Length: 229
Ligand code: HEC
Ligand code: HEC
Image (cartoon, rainbow, N blue to C red; front, side):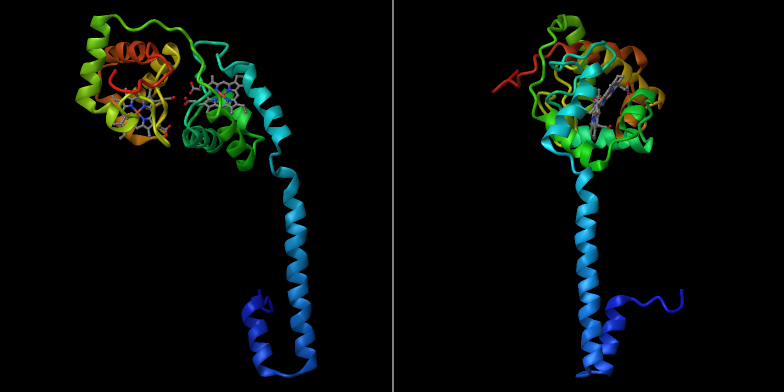
């Protein structure tokens, strides 16, 4: 590594040693030019990976194969992503990519996506309207069991009053019942461990308490009530 100059410091030293020397000023000029040239080259090199409007639509087509053409997933174990929180979608995509959240299907999907693609996809899906899955409202006794869990563990403290989510806290309203049960069970067993807080909370519950919670949340209509619930 000897002789590998740090451009700024070397240049500055040369500049002060030989101030007024035409050779120095031309060297100085050249290094500035080459820096500029490499910046321009860098810009062009990065252009193709910037997701354009068209490519986002193309990428989203791949997602529709499972998450649904109109946002209704093709299988009950697949979550709704239309209208989900942008930062949450982005975090999950990055977690699937790094393996912090393990799922073979999604790992295969995100493998070829760049961060720019994921940002564009997160923006795209967060702007769609959450679909109506018409899952029935939980019967009173089930709702009661769910409310006991919500107040004991303050789920609303993070997922907000109407479970509409906020920033990286996902919306849970009207999510697929089977998916909710699966992912809460995954937190409970530690299979999903990309957020220690949720793992601790779900581990503190008995597995039998998860189903009423899933049924209740799935039965909430996507629209957030204006006042009260
Ligand atoms: C072959 C089916 C399939 C395709 C195609 C697919 N997904 Fe998924 N996706 C799944 C499954 C299954 C899960 C649930 C994983 C689990 O249970 O942990 C999931 C989970 C997710 C989640 C987490 C949602 C949540 O509530 O935690 C996001 C975000 C997501 N997918 C985005 C996408 C995007 C964006 C695309 C397109 C680039 C895509 N998926 C393509 C099957 C698919
Ligand atoms: C300390 C804040 C906090 C509390 C309290 C909390 N959550 Fe969460 N929850 C989160 C965050 C953050 C995530 C996203 C985790 C991640 O990064 O993947 C999450 C994820 C979830 C998911 C996964 C959603 C999906 O689309 O995959 C479910 C279901 C869930 N929480 C239910 C609950 C329930 C039920 C309770 C109460 C027992 C609860 N949460 C309490 C912060 C919280």
